[in-house]
Image (tube, rainbow, N blue to C red; front, side):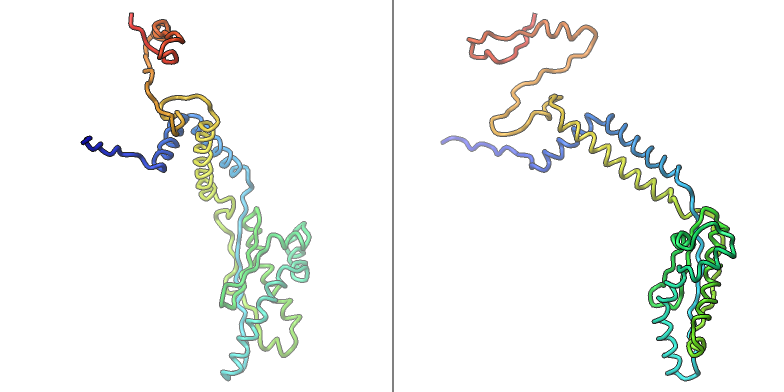
Length: 267
């Protein structure tokens, strides 16, 4: 009765592929590092070339002015909630921005100025947030405050007598000149650049490994049925060793049983 052969442990396919990927990255780490540094330098260079822009925000409370009764008060709040989106759209129209341009002496058109103004309404509130963007922090604050003031005046002008008694716009938080620019965001761009640099470095190392036809070691030999590494030639270091090594290498005649094998003949 033949003895039972011990089971030979086999590596998981995923582990083998991961090992090959890590080997490829390790062997070509220098090229990957150069590409990663290049990508990071480009990202930070683009960030440094961008013109800083500052943002200032003015907040307006849309107040419901109604009678003393609960029904009147609820009706006023409901009406203000319905109108607040219209006020947000009105803030970026030439009807409101023309006086802003004239007051501040800006050399832009209302359409161009509207691109630098953002009006938002926080959820479930009666507050308008008017945010102005500019390369000058003082100008950003001035545009936001002037837009808020002119919006108040224009709403009062458009409203009828009955509506004027129900709705009132009031500035609750004037815009202040910011101390730091809103863009570019150096910290965010640096983090993004680091991620892109890592992906580019790893991709370069793996790409070079996949496109290369050179076998650098046992790990580089394609695996598969009928493919088995039976021998390796060791690396011999030292001055003049390479010529001496190859002078001792002989190939057996084709008629022999090992005609395709490589042997090292010791002198």
